[in-house]
Image (cartoon, rainbow, N blue to C red; front, side, top):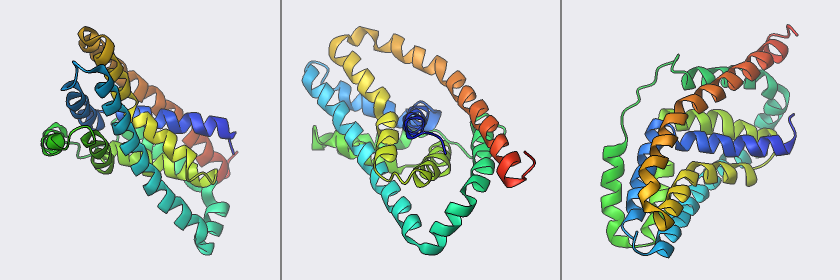
Length: 230
């Protein structure tokens, strides 16, 4: 089992990778648009970004808490996980890595239209609508976010018996770009277009690098624990 510090960094990284992947990125753009309405009031922009982060983090925390606690509290499931976790991790990481490389296709469709409709409905709520956006968008799992959350984050949390910290770090990671852009909106609105272009450019390489790491680790676990060849 890897050190907990590495697990914590992995959880945060998975959240960041989720946030800049195409479908979740559409919802984050909608959240940025929501916050930008208050660009003339920097404090409200920052509060919107923080409330959005809180909403996403709380949602992932609750979902992961229910899953991890239920898996750990069921004696049969707990014994199964303790015995076969290493054997399961390899194939799961390989599958997620292949998804990230687009080797395994998924029925991805753009989420901007749905995100815009949700944003329009919560506009009238005011500042607290940012928190509601975070909750709603966190629950709108796309294929890639579902793969990273259920296929990577939840098993990681189960292995480390962490139903609080690791899911919370993942949630913060998923909303981190919104906080960054909220800061830019608040203090340097003219630079947001450049920052967004940079983020879009590096997303593909970050996803590919993570996929290679997942495939490498997954391949090792598959050979060592699932097949017993090492």
